[in-house]
Length: 202
Image 1 (cartoon, rainbow, N blue to C red):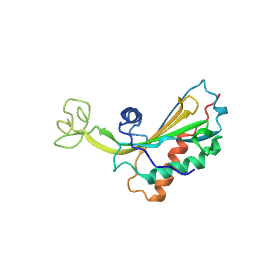
Image 2: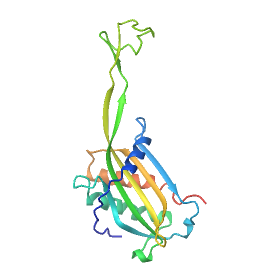
Image 3: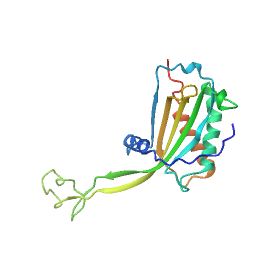
Image 4: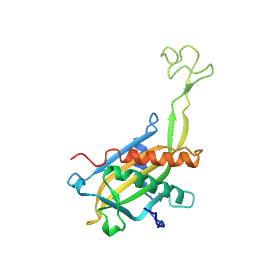
C-alpha cells in the first residue's frame, strides 16, 4: 500500500533505546525481543493498515528522519505480511490491526579490558598471578569503543479498541557505508526477524 506522509513526534522513545541496548551484547550484532497479549485471538486478524504516524524516528530530527527508510519499511511489510496472514486493507476502517514502526539510532558503548605495563601486557597481577609478576608491574587501561546501532520496533494495535496487542523489536549494529540496495536488504532482514514468530502460537 502507498506510504502516506509522516507526522512529526516530539517525544523521544528513551525506553525503547535503553532496553534494546541492555540486550545488545558485544558478541552479538542482532538482538530480537517480542511481546504480545496472550488473550487475543490472532487468527481473527486478517487485514492491516498503518497507524498514525506510520513511522516514528528517534531522535526526531532531520538527520534521523528519512522517507527512503520509511518506504523501505513499507515495502518490506507489504511483501512479508501476506505470508503471516495479514493482507493490506484499503482504509484504516477496514483493517483489523494498525501497525506503527519506530526507528531509533543510537550508540552502543563497549569497554574492552586491557592490562599493560612498562614491559608489555602481562595481566592484572603479572604473568604468573603475583602482584608484579614476570615483566614488571601492570596497570588497567580500558579501551572504550562506540558502535552505531539501529533499532526497529513494530507495534500492532487492535483497531477496534486501540490497544497494543503485539510488539517485535530488533537491534543490530549499523552499517553506515551500505549502498541503497544493501539498506533495503537490511531493512527487509530486520522486518523478517521482528515478524519471525508472528502470529504467536495459541
